[in-house]
Amino acid sequence: MEESRALSFALSITLAATPPQEIGGEEVDALCQLAYEIQHKLTQAVDLLHNAEKFPTC
Image (cartoon, rainbow, N blue to C red; front, side, top):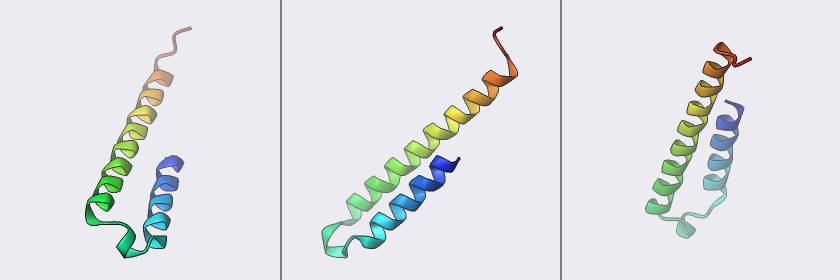
């Protein structure tokens, strides 16, 4: 979940540092959607790893 926090921080800093005229609403929406998708994939990966630990193969 540290990756999720780092991603949120990086997105926030990037958006805060970008002048409003250089980025439009569509770009902000696309970045937020991408961040959501990455966070969702990270959550799925963490869940998969936790489930794998419950059922050792050896």
